Image (cartoon, rainbow, N blue to C red):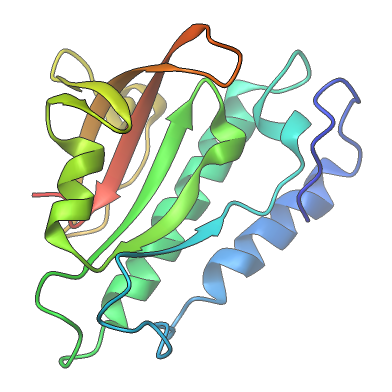
Length: 176
């Protein structure tokens, strides 16, 4: 369930965490079979209410639980990746900060589209710089499955309102 109200105090947190863990486990043995080779990208947004991961009612513990659920879901999809998947296909998850509600499970079907999101330089997604000075996996105590790596990038971009914004995007999975 995705709810956009960041001001409202989240209710039923234990139930929502159980749902998130069931959601993550539901990707065991799943790989989208309808993903056409011509498609650049497939994604699934994190199914939480916004106030769990953003705003004054969000806690670091909740953010850690949500991030780990995304990593686990990506791992299940990666394990189910068929041998006939495009050779360029990358299974990842992206944790966005400070707007963690935008975080998602992703499959990049095209190498150049993944590079547009993660390579240093300026492009349609703004100015991107790699983050090498820290690791949220280490800072948050996240468990990376064998074969998974972490890649952090800082993005400077212009919003719809004409203001400049900075965000961090942390990719976990097939990012090497």
